[in-house]
Image (cartoon, rainbow, N blue to C red; front, side, top):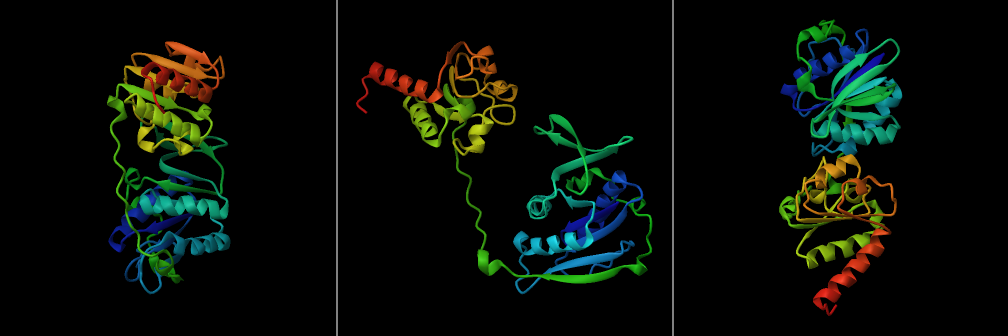
Length: 322
């Protein structure tokens, strides 16, 4: 098995990251053939370990790092060397390159790995999910890309069998400077939202709300009742509700006086987020939806139709002019 470690960091950190990635590689296969691909920001990399061919990336002209400038080189190296496993450090740069590379070369990627195991016929990886509340075990086949939490794997010489670096060969590969194409990066401030966890009235929408237009109507109604709009994970993914308003296990746990759920199925991860509400009204077209097991009042109908009727009733009650 051929395993390649891809290093993107300052020179003084490279050795520690390399040995950590190679420690991970030895957990994958003790007899693996190891190699290293580098992005270095200054000087030559005099590796003290024998890893054969070492590719050193450099950026032409400005020296400004850009994933877009490195991806063509990574694609080329993959095509020429066909490693079975590629290991990236699970930092922000490593994750970006790994995830973008997987689309370019059509090879799967699993991020934030902290363990490897095997049985008689299969190979597995371990990673944490739901903010480390759950350990997931995935079976995988090669070729594959991993981002590895390097701090988990001991960074020491025992990970490397051959310390004779006399046979290492270095090849410099220059990436094009694309800073002129993309300009200067600007970090935009995060939009500030009130805390949905402390509001008294919540309209929680799911996939069943149907469209962004219906989601906007639900948001407007939440403001009419001095409440807030929230959503299930599908509603967040669709872009109907801001990420900060996600309700459920991986989002907000809310406890309003009233929660109106429109078009969410009531899956366990979402139900955890609303179960502490004092009163829940659930709306779904599926009479067997899990939502009806936790709501106080349920309506089996289209969520958007229910919303329109609810707004009409509300306006009639308070004598709305609009």
